[in-house]
Amino acid sequence: MAYVTDLDRMLIGGELVASESGECDETISPATEEVVGRAPRATKVDVERAVAAAEKAWPEWNRRPVDERADVLRAFGDLIAARAEEIARVEAANSGNTITPMRRNVHETVATLKYYAGLAYSLKGETVPSTTRNLHFTVHEPYGVVARIAAFNHPFMFSAARTASALAAGNAVVVKPPETSPLSALILGDIARQALPAGLFNVVTGARAVGDDLVRHPRIKRIALIGSGGTGRAIQRAAAEVAVKHVTLELGGGRPSPIRARLRQGILGRTYRLRRRDAKHAAMARRGLRADSGGKPLAHDRGDDPAGKRYRIRPVGRGSDKQYKRCTACGSQHPCREYLDQRQQYSLSRHAVGRLQE
Image (cartoon, rainbow, N blue to C red; front, side):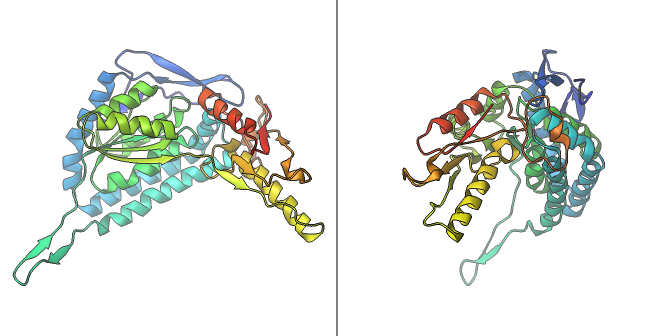
């Protein structure tokens, strides 16, 4: 498979640049296990450059009237919408998701940018009468430089839509996309270069060391992560070793999906079968990488209950082109060892009645 995008540069300070070391990492398609692109391997120097650019950009951005900031965010969304199909196809190829939900992700990103463009007008303080002679008032001030570390199941949406509120509030952003699926973030950087002031939006790519450099950077005061519980705890520890930072974590979990036992034959039995079918779909939709997917179905421990039997589900196989078909709801797994190990643990659990079949 040829590269799905020719972009292979990060966005730092309004320019598309290679890493300071000049090194790149190849990234593959989970559906074919073929190389579909490459992304720079950022270093600590690159992170420093991105933070310095963001620090320089956010004061002027914050001084701009709210209506101007809102107009810029809407224009940003319009440019994303103009390249929606390109983004969706690159996202599907690089993350293993199917094409239809990726198209929805792009449209949701555009809607979110426009939503926060409108919400920015409500960023007002409060005036509180403290005594009969005095008033207390509050004002909202931006953090300055905000870091966003995105998960690998919806990298574009998490890199763009989840930074809209920070931009609307007057902050500058440094985004670190997942090392397993960074290509859509490179497209995002290309779009941001055209729509946003230089340095306001920065993209640095690479492995965990890049994320650690962002978390530990003393001038980044606000950090947000979508990822695993282990990564969240590591970020909390690393941030606390440097300063008191505001950290927001959206973490995955066991996602249990209870299945009601069959109480008797007839209508309830039919209800049971539908519930079991729904649990299968919940576990495998978008290859089980949705935060709300039922990755761990639970059933009553009854020897005569067929819910206690394991069932097998075949996801779209590697090398298949079905992920680009509109009707396909389940894609290929990403060859991420941490994820596959987690799925194996679920399959060995005595409560798990669902199992992935490679």
